[in-house]
Image (spheres, rainbow, N blue to C red):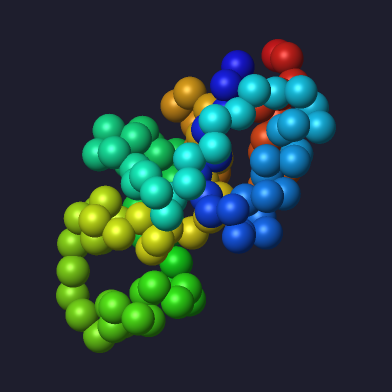
Length: 113
């Protein structure tokens, strides 16, 4: 099992998510959203578990800096163009995904059925 964590090194929740999986000896792949964004295919996979509207950080600095609160825009297009608009961390395992720090859900993923 490999867990993908999309986040930034400065994000406290991203660091907590990374620590959560490392403590349980689960292999992770950390994707820094400042350097590399989310591909259209990855976004489709994430939105199968998380609604698109829940992915954008409307309280974030980047959202305000771009004045998006005053504009109409294509949400998916903006997220793909500027990955700093995502809420973090986005944690993905296979076809499942979560947004923000959700250790209870992650524990369910790690528990054998």
